[in-house]
Length: 158
Image (cartoon, rainbow, N blue to C red; front, side):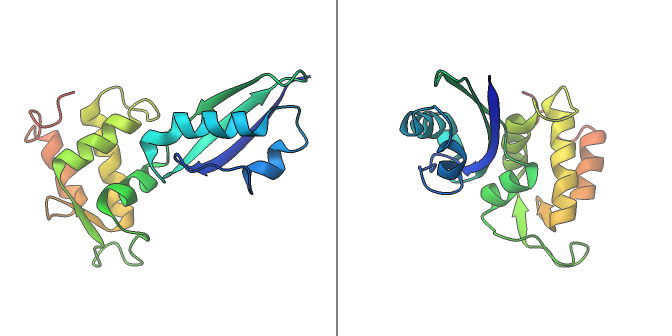
């Protein structure tokens, strides 16, 4: 009988301790092999919380699927802050460049409702609004309007 474990791990930093070890302990899989595979596949996310799904069989065979971190986690990692603003309307905690927004959008485009980087960048900007993050020194809502007006067409082309 196959089963599944879903867990959040820090990219490239999984270890056989909690929370992963207790989940894998009662299973027939080689815990160290699972940990190594997770670290190999999540290394590009370097410490950012990443959703991981482990499907395993009774014979010890396993398969790992790595999701994309939440948009807020990518923004926090890119901008270098820990917690969003308690008052995002007036108290801003960080500022992103258009290039940083594009980087996040490219990482998230497969997970979002968008089919292109330009639309994904607008979704990223929406998360910036709720976190209290500005883009190019201005409210993220202004960025979304400028994207609609075509100001960033060249910068956001994939």
